[in-house]
Length: 81
Image 1 (cartoon, rainbow, N blue to C red):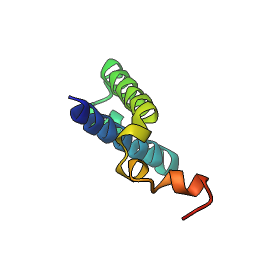
Image 2 (cartoon, rainbow, N blue to C red):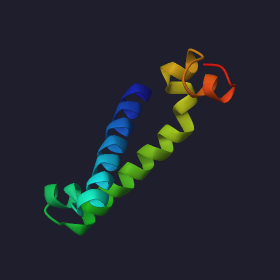
Image 3 (cartoon, rainbow, N blue to C red):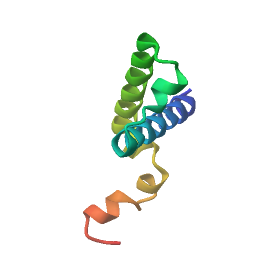
Image 4 (cartoon, rainbow, N blue to C red):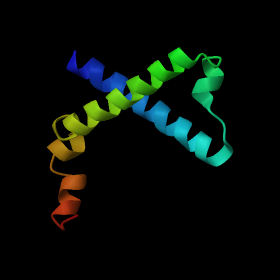
């Protein structure tokens, strides 16, 4: 179950990040285009993206292979590479 939630959260955060990139660069809202401009459905997607980000933010250290292995952000903070 935890792996499934992690994967869903990761996909949602990637979709959200790509959508914001498209909005910022081109004023193109992919979520709106895909969902046909149905405000309640769009809002639900945005809430799910936010929840996915919160989940990943709180579980990053535990779930991230790089951090668990002692690499990644952890080694950058300590000054070693």
